[in-house]
Length: 135
Image (cartoon, rainbow, N blue to C red; front, side):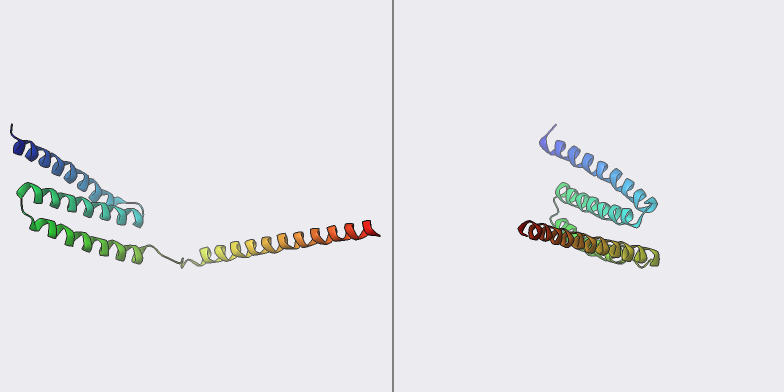
């Protein structure tokens, strides 16, 4: 067995493993329970396709495939960013969640006000004690 044959076996094995994993990612992107799982699996799928293209480039000694994989990586990045901004909300539009956020922030504000008032009352009590000691 020559070095070239060993590399061919290595490249073929790597491509086979990546194709199997890409198939699993495809299934995950179809049955993913949440949209974030689907977006992540599409991202992983495109990364595996890029790796397969690069291995094929090395295996076939065709350097133009490296350029193809770079372009594919840029397109994949843009697509994942677009999907993420479209499907992962920045602000919730559900009225119940908005009310809960508002209630939580009001409760936190009330707690902070009470804490500040308690500190002020404690300082006032210390001043009275000092004043009573002097008198």
